[in-house]
Image (cartoon, rainbow, N blue to C red; front, top):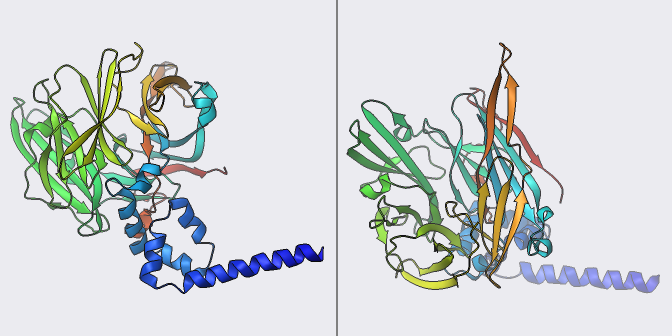
Length: 432
C-alpha cells in the first residue's frame, strides 16, 4: 500500500515538473508548439493549467492554429479524420445530424456501421425554407431565398451566428428580372481573417445576361462590401456547391460540355481567376471536392473513375491521385462526393432510404451502406378531411473537419429569434 502511494506521489511530482518546464518556455515558442497540435490535443491542454487554458482559448491562437491546419499540403490536415453530417429538410424545418461510422464494419458494408452522432440541430423558419449554402471546416452556412444567412458550428457550439443582411442576394423570379446568388467561405492568410464571398447574377425577361456583382464579408464585421473584380459570366451556370480550400472558393461552372471549367475566388487578392483542370473534359461527369485539405476533381464515365488533386494552388500543379476502371453500374453519377477516413463516398436517395457508397481508396473496394434514420414522408389531415403530404428529403451528406473556429468569437450567438422569423427547435449534444 505504501509502495503504491509512493509510486503515485512520484508520478505526480514528474507531472508537476513537466508542467513547470513547459511553462518556462518562451511564449512565442510555446505558442508555436501548441499551434501544431491536433484539435483534440489542444482540448486536453486546456485541463493542464489556467494559463494554458487562457492561451489556447484566445481568438488569436485559434486563428493561428486554423491557419496552420488548413495550409496547403499541411501534414495536420492530411492526418485529420473527416467527420460526416447529414442535412435534411421537412418543409420549413431543416435538421443537421452528425454521423459516426465504425471502420471495422464499414469496410464490410454493414448497414449498422453508419449511425447518429453526438450533435443534432433543428431550425425552423416561418417564411421561406432553408438550404445549405456551403461548408467550410466545421462551419455550415444555411440560407434562405430572401438572402438571409446564418452559420452553425458542426462541433456542437450552441446557437447560430446570423450574418449581416445581404439584400443584394435575394432570389427573384419575375417577368422583368431573375436573380440568383452563390456563397463561399475561406481564410485569408495575408490579413488572418475569415471571409465570405457572395456573387450575384441577374438576367432579364428574355434570359439574357444583365449584370454580375460580388460582395465580401469579413467575419466579425457588420457589413458587406462590393469588390471591384467582376465575376465571370460562367458563374451563371453552376449546379454544384462550392469547395472552400487552398485560400480560395472554387466552383465548377459552365453549361455546355466544351466550356466547363473551374472559377476560383482568391480570398487574399479578392479576385476571380481561372483554375486550369488536369485536362479537357467533354463527356464525363465532373465534381469538385476537398481531399486531404486540397482541391480535388473526380471524373466519372461509365465504369471509369479518376481523381486528381491540386497540390499547389499558386502553381496550379495537379497530381493524379487514384484511378479505377471497374466501377459498379449502380454507383450514382449525379451526387457530389465527400471524404471519409480512407477514401470518398457518394450518396443515392429514393423514397425509402439513403444508400451511401463508400470507396476505400487504399484497396479499391466499394461498400454500400443504407442510412434511413430520418423521416422520408409524412401526411397531415386538413380541415376538410383531405391529406396534404410533406416530403422530408436529404439536402446532402457532407464531410467536415475539426478546427478551433468558434462562432462566438465573431458575434453574439442566437438560440431563438424574438422576431419569430426562425426558431431553433432543438439543439442536442449527446454523450459519446
